[in-house]
Image (cartoon, rainbow, N blue to C red; front, side, top):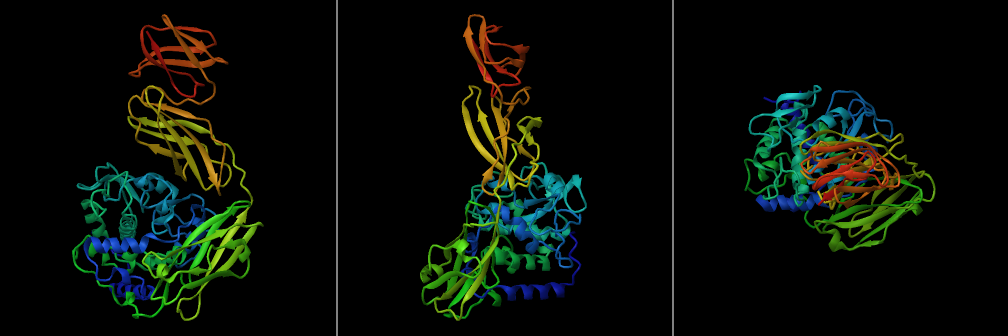
Length: 553
């Protein structure tokens, strides 16, 4: 039985009342009276268009979204009991920007979900590494347990085919459940690469075992003051909310005991009929655009939503450093602002000097009483100097799995980019992909027989990337990784091949196509002849970029 938080039910109910009262008037009007798939689709429409923050700005936002009540400088980490502190907008040592809903599940590309604060939390690095991209679940036998996060084999009926699950502390199980409800609704139109907990074939998005688990956790661990405060903080930043925090019973109307029934919005979501109103952004919205390097620009979209606006809205930038910022329009059509999607207002920051720059967005007219303003802030820094990284040989090579790794950058970076190329047994390129991560390793699970994978890595910072590292090769055979350096070619002749290379190659191995080592040569030089019987072979050296196929007839 999950232990409930150490608060009285009466206090929890009072918190829920306070929470509801904070919901902007009219925010949930579009989902009122909906049921079933129509209800979920209406919630999706409400959530999907929001201000998309940059990945580099997350450490600017975490101090307002994830700080302890008793100490505003202390990180509220749902993954460990370690005590750490924010230091301005700098990354906290030993912590990651964690996608609680794993980014690999949708393919890892940097779409809107990649920086959605509704599921991004500061996380202890060790716990984040241990939980990997495993599904949520209840652990039967733990392989990792830091007193807050457990990782291990799942209870019967859980895991969705994955042999390992991640179990958060009882105190946060409801938090994660409501986070997953949000993600399964806001991004229901995504195609899922991993389907441990989600499905591509149902409008419910979540599969049945995960629905059962998340509803259980949500019921037994009710909405906390932490979630309420965080929801408000996120709303001020990206102008959308987690409706499963504002309306704790909403999940029941989509997946649970009230599925198929009409959902009626409570008093907190009702609106005076016909009164012009601005829903987003509001006067407490803070548009933190993050950092940009001198000479670069940064654009962010803020969705301006209203209800019952009688005229077009007027918008302008003013105060302080407003000349460093720009918007493409001065008027927003009322019909677009009144729509469920709202008007996508683009704000561009193109600084001409170093430092922190601010201005204010003013929204008025439209029949509104008075005007509404939102503060905008951004920072211009020096162009980063990025070192060339060193890729290291892959480790944990087992069947289809291997882990790419590299040395950490000596300077501050936003993240690392892994460039991987997959070759077939004829050296043809099968695929070429980019993957991003905060860590100095990346796990792959798709090494197929007959394939060869190569990877290199770069660091990324504020629109700039470092020079590519050396290239490491991994093959689906006993062959291990090698670095790219010198080209080599072979001319087939009777009884073997003639070597053509500009420099000697060390440690040359020749394999059969089944992966068996046929011949090892300590060194080969230009015009050396290698005797081989008829057959097909794969050759590697410690300096070859990729394997060479040898056909001896």
